[in-house]
Length: 471
Image (cartoon, rainbow, N blue to C red):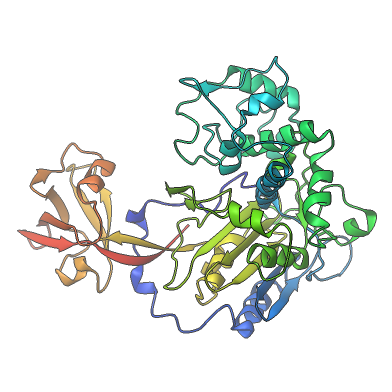
C-alpha cells in the first residue's frame, strides 16, 4: 500500500543519465521473449517469483517465474494470489463512484455527514473535506496518521481502529484547503472506505466483491480469502529476503487490504480500457479524468490513478497504480491511446513492480535496472551538481554526453560561481537550481572556474529535454 516508498522521485541533479537511452530498439510490450528472459534470469533460482500479465485487443496472456514459497515447490502463475497493497485504492474510488451512481451518496457530500457527530473532521477556512476530495487524494489529510501504535508498519496498520482514526481527525489541522493540491494519503482512502461501510451497513470487503469483483468475474480477488485461495497465496519477502507478515487491516482496509491474481487484474485492466463490456465502464472512465498535474512524485493524478511523472512516449497516454506491502510489490497500468495494459505482481521487494510495469508500457528494454529505476523525461542542461563546502560554489560532478553542457565543453570538476550574473556563494543548492530552471528553450548563463586549468570562462546553455533513469 505504498507504506515504505522504496522507489521515490529523486532530485534530477543526481540523475541526468540521458546517454543511457538509445532509441528504443524493441517493443517490450510485444517482445514476449524479452519478458520471459527477464523473469527467468531474475527469478528462476530464487525463493520468490513474479508474474507479468499483458492485455490488449488480442486478449490477455501471462508470464511467470519463481516460487510461492508456501511450503511447497509450486511456482507462481496467473492464478497465484498476491497482496496488492495500494492498488486497492483504485477499487475504493471506483466503489465510491458506484455508490454515487446508485444515489446512495453524492460526490460533494462532506465526509462529516457519514461519521458520528462526535467526530470533528478538520476543515480549512470553512471548506470541508468531501468524498470527492478523499477519492482524488486532495483532501489535505497526511500520508499516514501520527497516532499509529507501532513503528512496525504491519503491526501498526493492523491494530489501527476507527476510534484511533476519529481521535486523529478530531485533533488535526489542515495546512491547505481541500482540493488545493494532490497529497497521497493512506489515511484519506481508509476514511473513504470506512464511511462507505457505515453508509451501506456492510463491510468494505463485501462491497468490493459484490459491486466490482462479481460483475467483472474476478473470482480470486478479495480480503477474506477462502481456504482454496489461501492455498494459492504467495508468501511475501521483505527487502532482506526474509518472509514477511501479511496485513490484516481493520479501518484501513480501503487503503490497501485487497489480494488478487494476475488473471483477475487483467480483467480489471481490460474493463478500465473498455476492451471488455462492463456496467462499470462509465464509472471507470470517470475515475481516469486527470485532476492534478503538478505532483513531484506522482505527476498527473486522477481518482486515484496517476502517471508517476514517467516518460510518456509519443502517441501514449499512461495511467497506473502501484502497491506495496511488507513482502509484496504490485502494479497495474495501461496506455489509454494504444489500449493495452500490464499487470506485475511479485512476492519480493528487491525488484519493484511499478518501474517494470511502466517500462513495459513505455516499450523500453527490460533490464535489471527496470526493477529499481523509472524512465522519466525532464528538462535540463546535462549536468549533475553538488555544493562544495570549502568554497561555497557549485561543483559539476558529471556531464552527460551530447547534452548542452557537453556541447559547450563543460568538464567535471569545474565550479560554477555565477548563474545569470548572480553569485552562488551563500545560496543553497535548491536556490541555485531555481536560478537554472525554466522550460525547454530557456537560456542559462554560467560563469565557470576550472581549477585544474586555472582558467575562467562564461558559457550560455539552453535547457533541453532528456530521458533519465532515477529511483
